[in-house]
Image 1 (cartoon, helix red, strand yellow):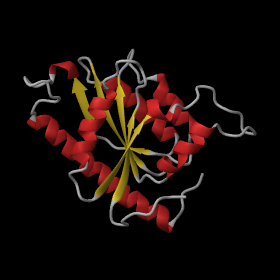
Image 2 (cartoon, one colour; image 1 turned 120 degrees about the horizontal axis):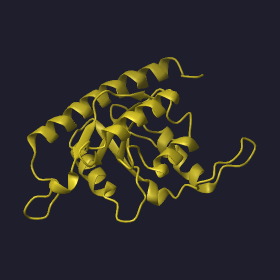
Image 3 (cartoon, one colour; image 1 turned 90 degrees about the vertical axis):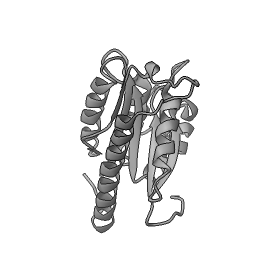
Image 4 (cartoon, one colour; image 1 turned 180 degrees about the vertical axis):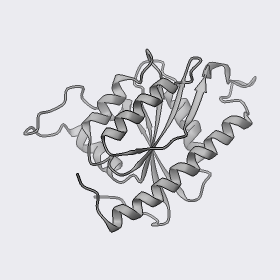
Length: 198
């Protein structure tokens, strides 16, 4: 059952895609979620795939869904938009994220997805490009702009906080959220008037 909410606010699910030991994803996701929460028109739901503990073996069509899959489904279904936070591993995104995407279908449909990526010199752009292709297959709308954080380990401030002040990065976050919210409102209205189905 979807949770009640202010109908004017958009619910954005920020998904931490990495589950590996020592991952940096929660730091990036917490930073982005904090920026997004500054906007009065957004309600942020931070989803950590490490906590979701989705099984790695997909069920057949006639099998019951595992409890962790069932538990996460309402949070995804209730989202108006998604922000996927991903590292770049071997020129792609992590298996844990692909696994989470593959467990669901209708939850992604006709909703916008932004990517926040981090990595070496590319900033995770190769992972982001592949994610856009995957989400297009699921009838989601991958927005053009996202946030890429190259050499993210160099972004610590002298006091140890992350990230250090960066006007370009702040502008990129604003552009990403502006595009995401535009698409989220447009697609929510479209789904309300004409339920999406394939």
